[in-house]
Image 1 (cartoon, rainbow, N blue to C red):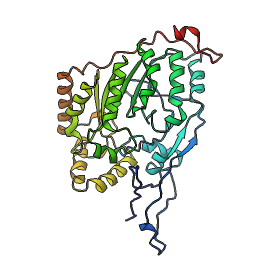
Image 2 (image 1 turned 30 degrees about the vertical axis):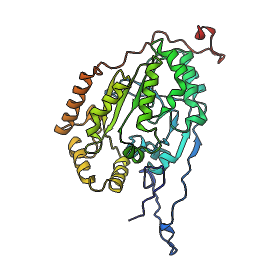
Image 3 (image 1 turned 120 degrees about the vertical axis):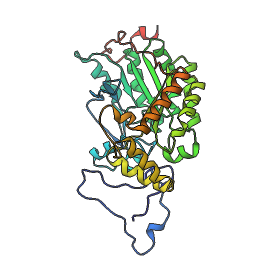
Image 4 (image 1 turned 180 degrees about the horizontal axis):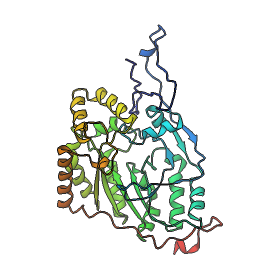
Length: 358
């Protein structure tokens, strides 16, 4: 058994090569007990992503949007359950520790977005940010790519939705409140658990649960439509918190609530199982059995639309519980629809038009 790579502030305990790699590596003791030594801090490496487009399109029937932007590839939040981890294999990197420590950044994202929105054949529809990796992950404090994207979207009056588990969203309340007044924005705070101990190992570099609720409250105070995304719901680990999370979000002013059952595509299944046996060895078997019960006997079923909520009696019970608590707190109506009729092409000069400030 290879020794787990336990780094403080990191969720993964391995860094196996991605599924496309022909070669891998295994650590071997050189006789000096080097494998037993404490690991040095694992620093985050940033890599420039010079993609020629930033808007990604999809035709998934179970998603409420057909286009999205992800200013970062990989995510320093390090959530062990993140369904986006396998995407790092396309880059020749590991979905394990590489995903949370080797982050691709798109410094030209705002410029590229401006060009795409200005194309003659572009047709406006709500853009989703935070669909794959968090646009407000820690690196955003330094690089401000999300802020620059919001400035372009605000200038062009383009509708957008945001999903994040970071309190850094508070930084952009000035832009978001301006857009909210025009019916152009909605925000979901993703809350997995209210247990700080569980959160610290499950999603080690994300904001603490209470900070997310505080951010939700500040967004609502500023008049920004905001709700809670209870995701992921993990059988026998955090599913008992379903009602309490929704209630806490309601107390913070949430206007709507959604949930997603744990998804374990490709390499995520092995990474999550490693984490589970490392942190909750006595529960691991029970958790995995319930996951398979919700996924037709497998760890994951990618079919539409059950990939989001699962199937079977256990998944049906979760859905019923969520419907009941959402209805009782009047959070089942969703957030207001976003307007698309205000969109205007960006100014080719790159300058904001004066009526933006009116």
